[in-house]
Image 1 (cartoon, rainbow, N blue to C red):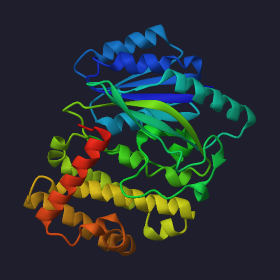
Image 2 (spheres, one colour):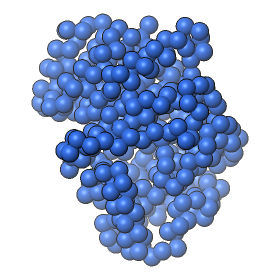
Image 3 (cartoon, helix red, strand yellow):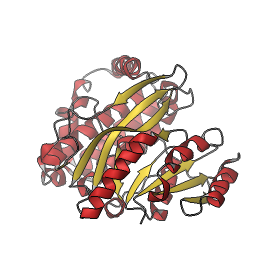
Length: 342
């Protein structure tokens, strides 16, 4: 049995795919690597096939028409045979030492039949252009190196959220959540780090820096210059998150889980506002943003009331649209400076 299925959605990734795959290969026969070639026009397909030929018991190659990052994550989950499912972007990689530690822990838990539904670990922003790093760890939020439930999770605040890079889901639980990411859409990692969480009741946090997140390229989705032109994709992501669970459903969940889900929605809603207002007073973006709120108010008035009046977005709802844009841009620039997002 494979312990972890690593899915690598790949589009025109020939320049860096080798690095991602090679670091995961250090897990040996305990891992499965699924390279999803998402309609690449470069040498990605050939690279994937070469790995399959060399490591037929470890690597799978899936060649499909282009559907975007989300479609690659979806297809990887269909193909996965591992007990756990982990997504690694093709320009990122894993730390070999941390992977070894995680596999040792998983083997111990699986041998005793006590494995968690969700394993959480750290990730590191790798600023390749100046060879500096910024680690995102969660030892102040979770118990370390032991099983726990949502009742022991300490509150997240402001823009704090878990990301896809932090998470390794039990495959059967992830499938049970029914999480399907939209195609041809950026920022779907927000859905992946939100919708499955109520299905994950037994948690385990390891304070190891497994995931290495390449950061700083001008074409990356986190670059502020890409926000305005992709506002509609962020709204699409936000709408799926808002529709995943009603306010009443969340009220019936464990307190720690409920508080985290509402905090996550609040933080991603602030991101959505930034996408829509950071490019100035554009009526199309403004109307799309308002329609999202109007639809939520009609569909789930309680969730609307919480997010609009009682959570982080309430800080700016009273501001004129242009002032919101200035405020959000200032906040994002501060965050970029802290995390060196570029």
